[in-house]
Image (cartoon, rainbow, N blue to C red; front, side, top):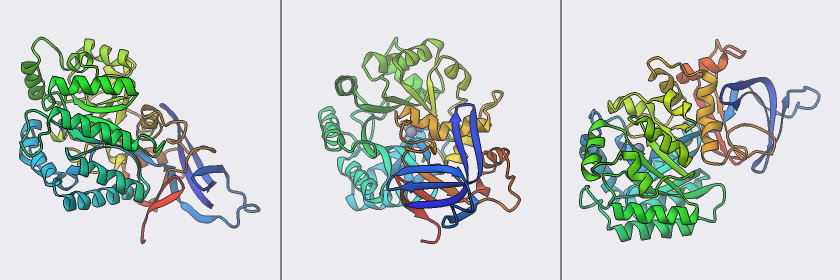
Length: 408
Ligand code: GUN
Ligand code: ZN
């Protein structure tokens, strides 16, 4: 059991958040059992974090574990960047020892950034994906994890056959399908350029028959889209995925920067979600995400770091970038906080358990230090979103267990 005196910011819905100064938060085992104003008569025994801020743990909807060591390497063009830095680095995870080291560094950095749930791509090797599951289980992470599938247009050392990519993915799915809420498998065909129609069709058949999760990249960059049109003449990028059966309510499409109205409509009808990765989109000069057009059509939008094209695992940074990278459409601090907590939880169909600090939910949360001149009023949320470096993480808790704490 933990009982802590602190200040809470809690998302309520996409346009509202509450600031709860000087409260007591209690959890027992993995669940929150109380959140109420501090009462000196009842709460003399509470741990004192009354100068900290407590928020629900952050949720990263799109991140590449096996790229952790090549973040920030400049090459402002997606396909060249993949060839120059990403494919060679992912191929290094062929060595089990290397995969283990990258995995350990990744989870340590993830928890240090206050992220409690993440949707992860690993390299195209079954052992690298198993290593990620093993580490996530041992360290106590909550995650959806998938082995990247590639059977076309990629270096030989990363290329799988359609049968082995699908067969290994199904084995991973079956091995990990019983872990309930903490860990799940997510099918991960990289994108239309590196997966054959046969692999995508069979994967689509499997996910629909088994109600499984799937993630891929969609319409990130003009040159990529041109290449897709050469491989699939007469079809838009979204139609390629729709016709091969990849779009469902458990599908997460990263980027979706360049879409026609018709394509946005297809995504809306399918119930699939979009992982917006603003930092990545401007690093690779992919373009400006049409937030308003996509939101107006009722498509669920979440936010991802997309490390290594995104520079950091800090989701507060990506929330800020989501605002900065709309040239005319303003996104409020309440909306941005909601995206990286409850909104992303809703996309993952986990909003009954995580995403906000409510009695009965799982204790997934983060404590942040506050600057000396903190605004102890509702404006604190705006300061937090736009000056995130002033609020370093001091403790991260997942399902009631501390996974990161400063000084330990
Ligand atoms: N498209 C296909 N693979 C990738 C990747 O690893 N990162 C990004 N940003 N886009 C991709
Ligand atoms: Zn990505």
